[in-house]
Figure 1 (spheres, protein in one colour):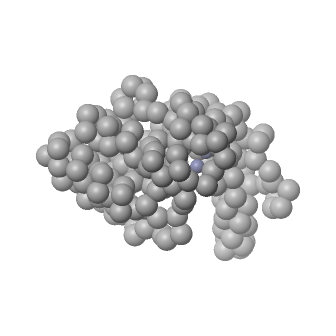
Figure 2: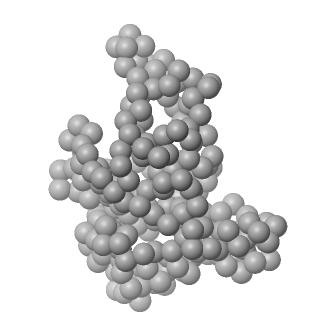
Length: 212
Ligand SMILES: [Zn+2]
Ligand SMILES: [Zn+2]
């Protein structure tokens, strides 16, 4: 888990319960990895608490043959993180829920083959959209979410040229549109001469499974 906001943890109890049921005979529970400071913020009243593995934000560990590296992200949660996953020579980066793109994260996202990156909102849509002003300020702030413009700036200046699959996600339902994201990102990639596979992840639809 990257942080305790409801859009990230609301499905967790159900997932833990479903996994437990499926693996009842084997007596296996789904291990959940949460940062040490985030762990107390997760509510387990609806389901028996699974084995929670607590980690220090910024640390790394292994799960089977996958090496996990966490890194701190700028977001208004208790102890939010992103992840890089390494296995069999493949590196995957996951960075959503960040108010801006600090140099430290750019470094973490070097040499990724697959990157899931936030492209949260279109600034104009957010400004004229339905959210109260205080929420708009929060979303736009340094601890809020990455706008399409932020994301395109990163693609134009810093995206690793070896990326094979770029998934843009965590799109705002009210303040963004997948086609706006796709067009902007395609332009930025073209400006760099990069041709990764571009996928726009939608809120209510599962993406395909990406295999390497
Ligand atoms: Zn969040
Ligand atoms: Zn979120």
